[in-house]
Length: 279
Image (tube, one colour):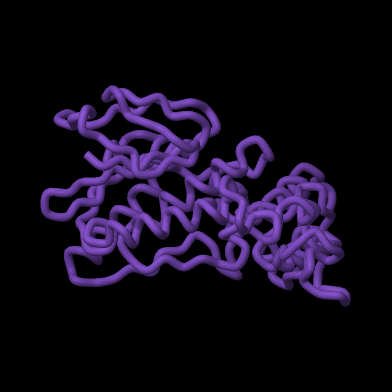
């Protein structure tokens, strides 16, 4: 969705409409044809999702990572979590020079750009920015276990430097911490299991397909219907629940802002807020 006209490392801003189209296509196709999806946002070849699709700025990072967990885990299919995604690990810092990158795909591409555009500083600057967004190195930074040297990954020298934020963003700091991204992942997977008829076997229906800021869908099974609402923006957004929803009987099953409720059909969503609502 974010590959430009000349390939992976040329700029393009991803569009919500395209994300909705892709998700809707595969959710409905698999359900209607007795198939089964593999759900993922990250793997060893993809950048960190919180950096790529939302914001890894400290004030937004936790909310954004939790929102993405909700967005992904309550769809139909098997959820795949890549190492560090459960912590909200982030992509390569923008301050890292090209000498800190190790992926041959990226380094070979940079060599070509230097040969073709050695006098075009703006092009080279843009290309470096695209590496920070899309390079495979983003997912290959050593796993951040704790705040000890080399993030607790090794007592030796790892193949590439550990992330600058490892002292605060690591497994030891998150496990057992109620407000952490790790604990939220536990909550969303627990919810998926406790409502398995809806989230595992239920139907999928996209809501507000024209909205370019909020991704919302319903999962339903027999007389049960659950709304999954995700604000993908750092700005506050208004979301209009569909007509016919009785908010008096609505129950918020999960929220990345803690205790929350739905009291009227127009809901004001905060930065990267997500709500899972049983109606």
